[in-house]
Image 1 (cartoon, one colour):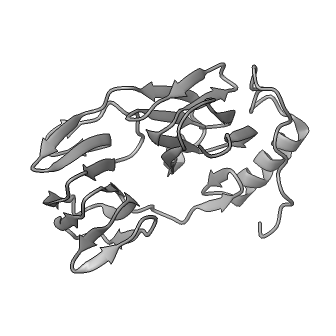
Image 2 (spheres, helix red, strand yellow):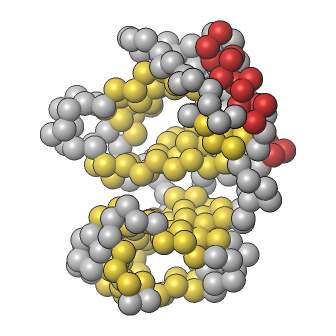
Image 3 (tube, helix red, strand yellow):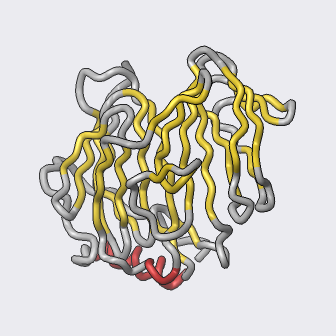
Length: 244
């Protein structure tokens, strides 16, 4: 297996960290006192809101780690929401031909995931150990991304390799996919952002000043981020504030 992963305490604001576990196990701790192991087939969702700190450590004697971690920007009205942590061990999962679909967040095909979200959104995992073909309906109000996690997927005659993101603009009503054997990919989607986001280090906001304040608060040990109990080791330092 790969060497263990250890991430010292680090802060977030105004986003959700969304972790979809495929192989191995990770122990999550945060400044709310959460302590949760995430296992394959489960989602961990941390809502940072006005501020949170967390750590992630691989569990010893596990196979290589493979997970998809997405950042979901909170809408402007919810950027100062109280922080919280949610764990989803069971998600809607069904078979369509040779392909297994798991609904990670949002709604699809009359199904609804239990996963907390603050704006219209979609996350769908497709896995085809033997390969297969599928046509998925899309919400034309959403922009979508196709993100292969393993194997090859063919879209409109083009081969998508792992960790290439194919962007689909709003207006699409369906997408036809051919998954080669062993392929796994994510379909993600949501309404386009009303205005551009600022992203710096671990902070996301519509407002540069909010990010500058968060960086200063983290460096000064402001209580908005709290302490992660149970983790042995130093917390991460913010890099120099540049470009803001």
